[in-house]
Image (cartoon, rainbow, N blue to C red; front, side, top):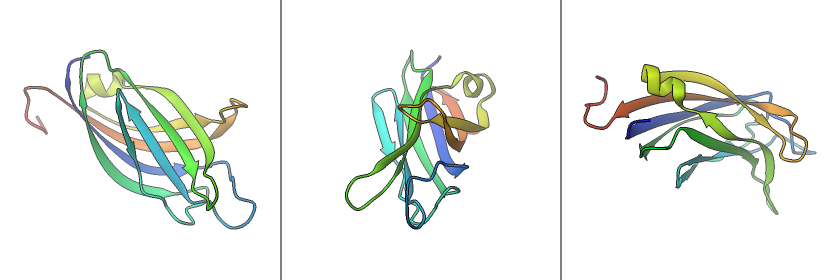
Length: 132
């Protein structure tokens, strides 16, 4: 993987496993790319189908070819992990320059499907102007 800039939009979620007994979940995501970590805002009452539409930029170095994501339900006392995917491949976005994809997340203990998160990704190799 060549060095460059990865622009990632965390768009939305669907079919997320409900972690709240009462009311709707308040989901947010943590994204890990290499040593960089970002957090979306919390979608209050987003429930099983939250929308974030938040864009982040990551400076990529040689050797970074995956990203990780965790989806959490924000609660007053302690947040609950909805699901995670520790190794989402970036190979398609490196080849094509862009990707719109749904990423499955699973429960940490069970490994069962806990929904999907949608991302749009753009990769600009170092030394090229964005959009080329």
